[in-house]
Structure formats: C-alpha cells, structure tokens
Image (tube, rainbow, N blue to C red; front, side):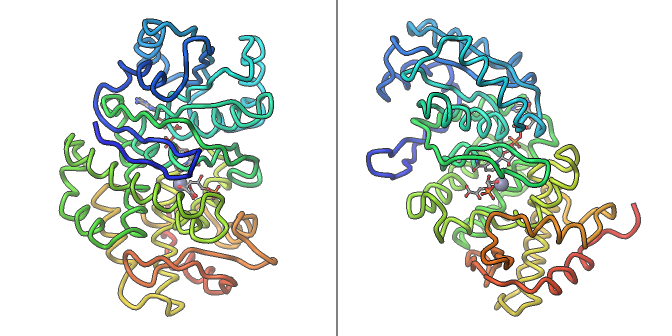
Length: 366
Ligand SMILES: NC(=O)c1ccc[n+]([C@@H]2O[C@H](COP(=O)([O-])OP(=O)(O)OC[C@H]3O[C@@H](n4cnc5c(N)ncnc54)[C@H](O)[C@@H]3O)[C@@H](O)[C@H]2O)c1
Ligand SMILES: O=C(O)C(=O)C[C@@H](O)[C@H](O)[C@H](O)COP(=O)(O)O
Ligand SMILES: [Zn+2]
C-alpha cells in the first residue's frame, strides 16, 4: 500500500492506494475515528454494486458495522437532481443521523453524487471515497462534490472533503476498456500540468500503463494523486491555483453538456479539450514551446479522441463554454500551457481565437 496525505490542517486525510484494500476497509475506518456505533451508508451504481458491494459489506459487517446501501443508475446521467433526491430519500429511510458515514463505492459519478448527498444531508455528514475507476484517482481527491444541470456540468455542488480515500486497485480489473482509456485522460492532465518529469515518465511507460501493468498503472495513479493533493492543499476552494486542475475542462464540459451527458465520457471530452487548450496556447503565443503535438500524441497512444467530433457546432460549443464556472466579469477564463508542466490561468481569452481553434480541431465529416 502507498499513502499520500491531503494536507488541510484539521481536515487532512490520507489517500491509500494498493491491491486488496477493500477487504480491510473496516480497519481503515476505525483508524480514521469511525466507530461501529456509526451507521454506514454505501452509495454505489448498478455496474459496480454487483461486482464489488458484497466484498465491502462483508468486510464492514465483519468489523461490527451496521451497513445500508443504495444503488443508483450507472453513468453520468446519475449526476442529476432526480437521482440526488432518490439518494437523500434512501438516506432518510435508512434512518441515518448526523453521525452516519456515507461510503462512495464507484467511479467519479458515484463519488460526486454521494459526496454531494453527504455534504447536504442534515447539513453535512462524513463520507469516505472508495474509488473504482482510473478516472477516480482524480475525482475522489479534493472534495469537489456535485451534480449536473442540463445547461452545464457540475453547476450544483459543494466543497466537502472526505475522511479517507481508500483506492483498492484490484477493482480496476473489472473496468471496461473504454473506461480505462477515459480515466487515463486525467492522468495525462496531471502529467501535463505537473512536473515535466511526470509527462516524460508517462510517455516512456505508455504501453505498460495502457496494458494495465500493475506497477506502471499504480505508479501513474500515485503520481496523479500527488499532483492533485499538492494543488488542493494550496488552494482548497479554487480561489486561484486550483483552477489549473481544470486544464481541458472548459471545452470538455461544454461537449459533455451538449451531448446531454450521454455521449462522450468525461475523460474523452477532457482529452479533446486539452488538445484544444494546448492549440489555443500556441495560437495566443502563451506557449513558449510546442505543447499541442506532445499532448495529442500521448492521448492517441492511449486510444483517446483528440478532435472535436463533427456533430458539435463551434458556435454552440462557445455558447456552452460561456456557462463555465471559471468565467469572471463576463469573460472567458481558461487554463493554457506555457510549456509542458507549466500551466497558466488566462483571463479574458478572446472568443474569436477559441472559435478558430475549435474549427481547426474539428473532425471533417462523421
Ligand atoms: N470531483 C472531482 O474533482 C472530479 C474530478 C474528475 C472527474 N469528476 C467527475 O467524475 C465523473 C466521471 O467519473 P468516471 O469516469 O469514474 O465515471 P463513472 O463513475 O460513470 O464510471 C464509468 C463507468 O464505469 C463503471 N464502473 C466503475 N467502476 C467500475 C469497475 N471497477 N468495474 C466495472 N465497471 C465500473 C460505472 O458503472 C460507469 O458505467 C464525471 O462526472 C466527472 O465530472 C469529478
Ligand atoms: O478538482 C478540481 O478542481 C478539478 O478541476 C478536477 C476536474 O478533473 C474535475 O472534472 C472537476 O469536477 C471539475 O470541476 P469544475 O469546478 O470545473 O466543475
Ligand atoms: Zn475532470
């Protein structure tokens, strides 16, 4: 097992990464101050539940905890007001109280949804992240919780830090190939905004990581979590620095929303968004070295899309981008790159340049 700490003073918490961790989840909870008198409420989805819930339940009941659970539909559309309401209702029916603890067993969707339910139920209860996707090396860390609105991604949410992130890498063995690729997009993001050495390492290890080699993948997830934990520790509520974690997301979130959260996965949309943001960095003269080609090439090695699909009209993408949460004083704010490993938050990005890049990055035909 490897451990990192998200250093937030009294609210600091560990990220534990390794195989088999779910079998000892009860011990980790006990060590984090969660005694067996506290009811546990697992939120999972209809894909993850049948694969991994029983193991978690057995481990928890064996450690003396009372466990209730709810299963939500799989996929991005579960990050909705309707499903959120169902989760809250299930929490009330399970007779949870302010000392109860929510366990998010799943990918980023379950983590964001369960975290938001925990942040708001009885004005806030503790929760624990039990990530089961590669992408969730990102989503389980940092305390951004929330759900989508049809008009924009994550427009409803709260900052609420977990007590613990327990990342059992054995769960990744059941992940479908598309979700493996999708999760690797956020690893590429952490490499592109982190140290150049991480990017170079990832490039050198691309085949091993893509093949799911346990050591290489474990190292990639550890390094990704480390970038994220360091940024969150310095700017928990995104007053400035944390915005760099949004590299690729201004375009990416717009594409997801235009797809009605039922087309591109989050990772796929972010992959396309990173290439667009890197191309924009070059067009605006922010980049002092080529950044679009190295990122595009790495994403392609992981089998990720790098062009805006033809179905997206650049004008509509731009319109959706205007609802981005980073926007300030009516101006577009985007994360660009001066170089690999050197993100820059640029305010008042000219829309004409964004539109030109969206046209350039758009796939021809279907
Ligand atoms: N809060 C944050 O900081 C943050 C960061 C990044 C992404 N996100 C959010 O995360 C979400 C995407 O997360 P995701 O890619 O994990 O999606 P997801 O949770 O929908 O999981 C992807 C798919 O894989 C299935 N699945 C999950 N784990 C599995 C396993 N071990 N075996 C088999 N199937 C499994 C799920 O049921 C789903 O069908 C987006 O909503 C995104 O906005 C949040
Ligand atoms: O943790 C962050 O901060 C991020 O930006 C991480 C992103 O990967 C993630 O998708 C996040 O949910 C986006 O946040 P948002 O504030 O743009 O909704
Ligand atoms: Zn993301």
